[in-house]
Length: 194
Image 1 (cartoon, rainbow, N blue to C red):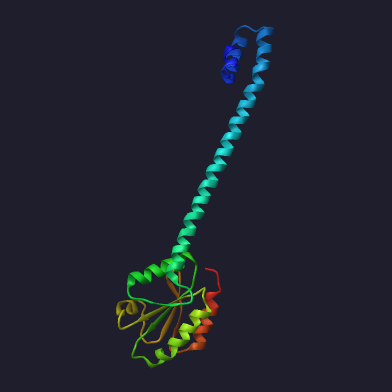
Image 2: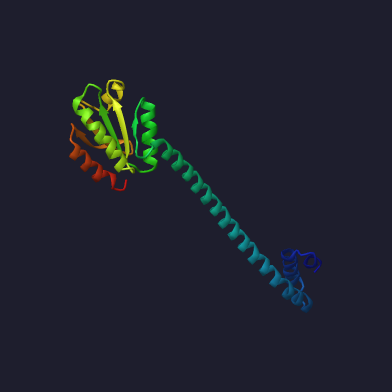
């Protein structure tokens, strides 16, 4: 009973059970009846505490995951510049933009152009206007004379060429100064869920 007085209810119950097995009498039985309810309450509190601790840990981990995702989305959004046409100067820049667009599940239109190309000069203002209209789509522009290695990798044989890219993979292409075709591809692929 001394252990019960010290608040060690589990130890007291264990000792009383052993005593009851060795030498059963009414005094042990009455003390056991006093101690056992406290043992059950302590066990219930332990289970409740453990459940609440697990819930708190899960909530904390979920909040951390949400915070990290929000940071990634914010960083990706800063790179993509909605409403603007981004001029590509390197393969690394292109990969960085594709990664950011993939995180945000955005369609990317990659416009291959050249300064000497007449139809490209016609499509330049059209492309800029489309970028302002479709802010949920990422518009990139690449000069094939300055970035020939990228143009070669994308199998560009004539300009202007517009590649529709989702998750870094080309899903469609418009070759030539086809304003209507480009608008149709943007409408088709820009609205679908990736």
